[in-house]
Amino acid sequence: MKINFLGGVRDVTGSKHLLEVSGKRILLECGLVQGHRAEAFERNRNLPFDPRGIDAVILSHAHIDHSGNLPTLINGGFRGDIHCTMATADLVSILLRDSAHINAKDVEYVNKRHRRRGLPLVEPLYTIEDAENTLQYLVAHNYNRWFPVTEGVDALLRDAGHILGSAIVTLDIEERGNRVRLGFTGDLGRKDLPILRDPALITDLDYLITESTYGNRLHEDIARVEDELAAIVHETHARRGKLIIPAFAVGRTQEVVYTLHRLRNSGRIPSLPIFVDSPLAIDATEIFRVHPECFDEETNEFLLREQDPFGFRGLHYLRTVEESKTLNEMDGPLIIISASGMCEAGRILHHLKNNVEDPRNTVLIVSYQAEHTLGRRIVEKRDRIRIFGDDYRLRAQVRVMESFSAHADRNELLDWIDHANSGLKGVYVVHGEEEECLALAEGIEELGIEKTLVPRLGEAVVI
Image 1: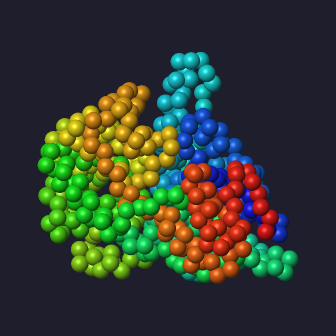
Image 2: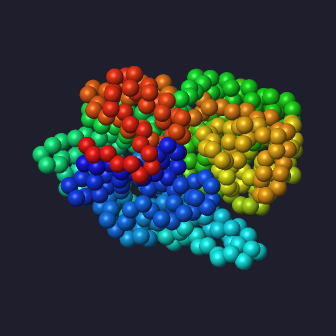
Image 3: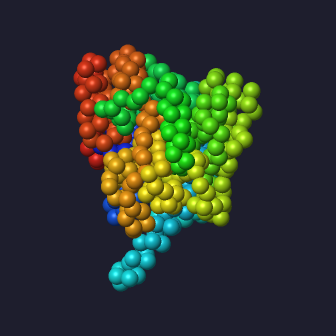
């Protein structure tokens, strides 16, 4: 068996790992590369393999950095099955369409500049029609049920606890009379997160491909989430300001809403209007409502008492642009939750533009912020930030809550890997910035797993 590391390597976007087994080629994920526009365009358009030669794809979850380039794969000639959980299939259906819409807007902006400079125009990476065509190739599975992928390769999806439907992939591989069990964490979640079950523990692996997003960092205690969020709400309320929360439409928005619901029920935050301003988040929330099989015991009990964890008095979901614009005229205190989580696109940009220069307001960061994103510049508290080509003074308060993170931190990753180490022969560390990957690899070696590799982009290993 050969593993080719083709994306999400010493980086956190564009996850792609290609397995070659007995003449068959299985692709673990086909994520969108995000970051510098020119480089991202080039890498997303030119896949590092012939799509016609791929026999099957397995998705760990629906986030765009793991699934977002599937339409390009289909357009290139792939005609196999794309395996995932049932909740992932539902989320992919909305996320790919949203990705196509964002890409079209991005290309429109680029082409305006190209016209002025007399440069060739560019085409969107894929269209909404391409995204919709991709959905016919999805094959959905329940957790904890083995299924065949190709001849000699069977797969099992176990709960990763990262977002709705996220999975740890186990592959049972037989080649030339030898059997190997390979694990792939996808993105590993955390214990005791709101809504979702804890990540499944695994003990039966020979080799492991693991993420390392927080490979050198520790999160705050999850038990402090409600206390910390309540304190930030009170601080902003006392200033009569607006609390602006950039949040990924899938996962983070629902976790924040659920936590605010619990705080409102217990009387721990004042009564103030809360707005979820994201059509994608509204669609994703509807998908959450129809997948209670992914919920943990506490959330299911809450569901029995309250009927809807994601709806309560004072909470408003805004779908239209006109509704969104009304928030500009409102005075605080109020809360706005809007996408995208890294502040790179979507309605959150308008809310930041209109609110970052007012010191009464708070920008609350609850998601990982990759390098070169507006969200990262806000976390770094730059004096000035650029939005829609204009500079704004960052005078609003900036607060960061990493305790909301849906990624396991260094200790949580090492604990999970240590539990899986009943004879691991090798671990490959991916999906993290270089410093994080290298630091986690060092920690893994300290567990006694000597064959630990941080691959470089395009590197391959033979097992």
